[in-house]
Length: 438
Image (cartoon, rainbow, N blue to C red; front, side, top):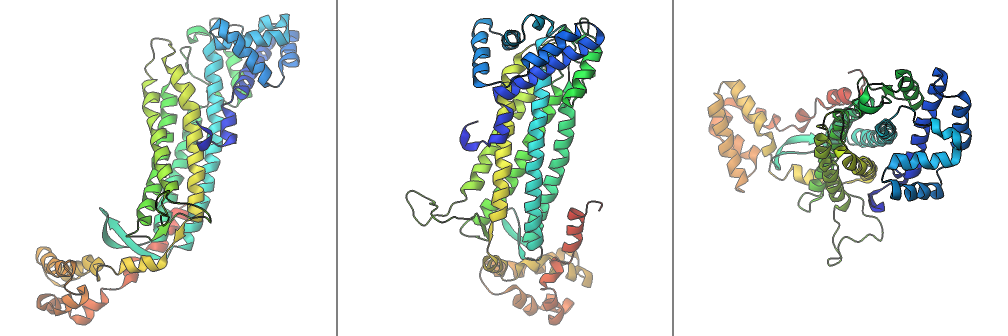
């Protein structure tokens, strides 16, 4: 990813220095296990750590790249450079292993490291959403379906709904992390013919992974497909929040707005503009993350025990998907923290349709009074359409309607226009969202 949409801590996970460090640990731990089995001398395993356990400086990385330019093989270039550090004992490195043992186990570690950052990102977002939800719990606003005024909700319910969604996303990501955290040190075609399964168990424990039950020379890619699909779902949730904010910021609505900082400019041509640029940006970033899901799915169907058609894909989508999602989650958290709410505009919009938002309650009251649902619907709708056409207030028209007044009476009709009726279950909904054991 380009620096504009990257954060340093996540980028570092995918830097060559970190990747080579993980490769070294895989090889060195494998040597320790092989020494315990008596396959290689214990002194050789010790020297691998003693002489090879050095930072992967830019100079070392350049040396590996230089070797790879000749070998056209990244793992051989790595082991060759390691042998330059270790000396003759390096001949015991990579005993019975194949390149995928190193590459796949390393990828698992990097994805786990990335996921830990993403989980922390979600925790920060959940904290911000909870704070905003609780402070706006009782701020009644217009609920909309199809973009049209429907019935009242509260701003707090919007935030609480997003909170509940990201709670689910956190659970999905935890499961995805567990699913991806497998290690394969099983050798060519995964049969352990040239390496003892103990080595895999030993290395897995050292890396914080679990042994892959059956690797065919590669770890099965259904695990990776599920991982990236989970990232795609989280990205879609980000877009859902961003889209809601973008709609609320429209001039005709203007119930909420991204924070507009001093000195910020909204348009090169129109100085008055205050555009929802952050949430529009989040919409675009979500598309990128989702766009990496299909290639991950297509990686599942490899030829026989392995091919490398997945490799180029993962070298790109591994860093890009995690770096993009990390940036997007952090940006969304800041948007939520600083989001400006406009109560006056919210109240204005609530009253915009002259009371039509209470139509369902009137409909239900008429059916309970003895009218058929069909007749009640017609009675309510004929008055509602008058309001739509600018011919009065809904309450006045209903009280003047002979049929409606006969069944309900003027006082009872007025009582139906109570905003509290629509918010009476808000506390119960909040308990469901914010009480862990509810």
